[in-house]
Length: 254
Image (cartoon, rainbow, N blue to C red):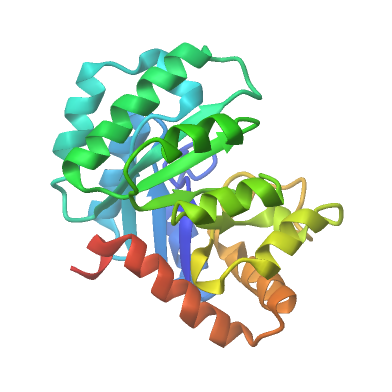
């Protein structure tokens, strides 16, 4: 199974990424997408992809980090896209929960990176927190493009809008949380081939590891929960999920 979103480039959480990758492989995780949040973390993601066969990189500026976003950032991401193991631009988006950057800064960086992805024909990975209406309205005004909404946390109405745009929905540890019935219902009722699973490690660990540091080796817990919700065997679920992830991150198969 493929962990479509993790941060092994967080060197404080993962001082030895090789150990984390081996533990994930032992748990059945065959591919890991390491996601950037700014220039430094994007370069770290690419370095890990260079070093480990089953690791791929996503490069871009997270909305909470766009105070450092500049034309030089776009230049770097354009250059990194030529790397054979850079598979998407992200994680970009809007975050109105935290106030580390202004809405104006976030919107500027988002539009710039959307335009870059269109230029490169690169899929996009989004971060969105308490800004689904604003983000979806922006995307609805643009031509359709391959989108993945990482760590889906919107309501059912927003999910229908996202699916109407052709988005994939990323589900992770919160799927297992006791008070997250709405996410479980969205995960049950959405087309199976529009879902992918992720850990977002080192954040958002699934039960029974909540409160601890998350790890890609915990991905099977999310797969098992989703299979239970969908009423299918885990192996059948993973076959569909991996096909969807490989189709979205098309450079993985080159």
